[in-house]
Image 1 (tube, helix red, strand yellow):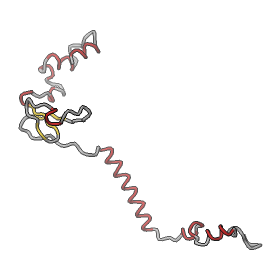
Image 2 (image 1 turned 180 degrees about the horizontal axis):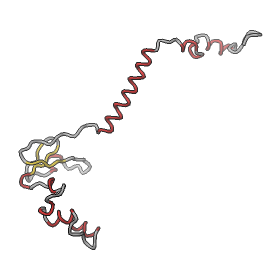
Image 3 (image 1 turned 120 degrees about the horizontal axis):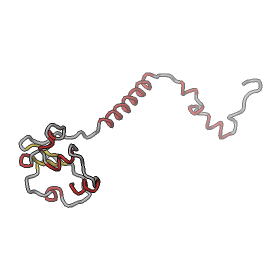
Image 4 (image 1 turned 90 degrees about the vertical axis):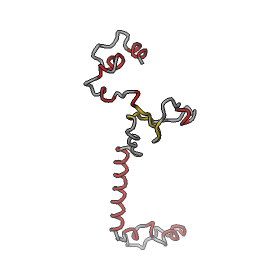
Length: 146
């Protein structure tokens, strides 16, 4: 990480920068929001798929050697149990689904309430319409009638 920062900032970082404080020592992060998130390596446990990794155990021992596998791992303090599970659906997706189902439910209510027979007067609902159109008499009207 130090090499990447040196390439990105060849003139160096200012003394007060959070990244510089983190690279120099953890003590410099006290009093910042990041300082509360720093864990002691001796008291930290790595959790993947609801199971704790033992110290010294390789990820490939537990998950295999497939390089395309996406793994979400979380650090917890040792002895505090597994971390809280992430929701299967994000908040935005949940809101979109709820809006969709609410809209669909409202449409179904309107259809259930609607007992109109308006569609029976439509041309597509006329059972003799196809017969008249095939015989070519569909547009014939009596003289004087509109």
